Length: 155
Image (cartoon, rainbow, N blue to C red; front, side):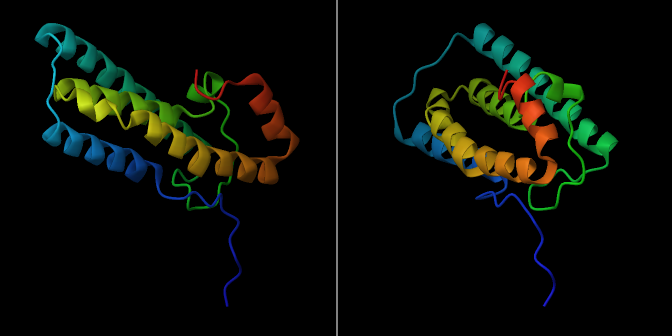
């Protein structure tokens, strides 16, 4: 029997959690009467959020590649990444996904899609972040505790 790998034990891949929220939101959008933001404001804010989300996500991925550690939470972490976007937030990937989620809702003119976002963030917090933080503290000890003490969780 192969040895057990030490992993964070997240409940699901985070992108799937965000996609599930989007799916629920678009289902609500189809079922409930909708309102709408003015077109120019909606498109401008949606485009701004999408650009910011893609920039944050790209910076996040490049930071993991530079540290030569796997990005997926179901592969063992080999390095503690504290540079790049991690100087500003402990969770740049989840921040980027949340911004992209909001951008999609705005650009699709689907305000009901935003309704599940707080639930999605709660699931990310309890089912992913809390588990990852325990795992990283187990792996990196004082280095991770120091990083946590000096870096905010979101922004």
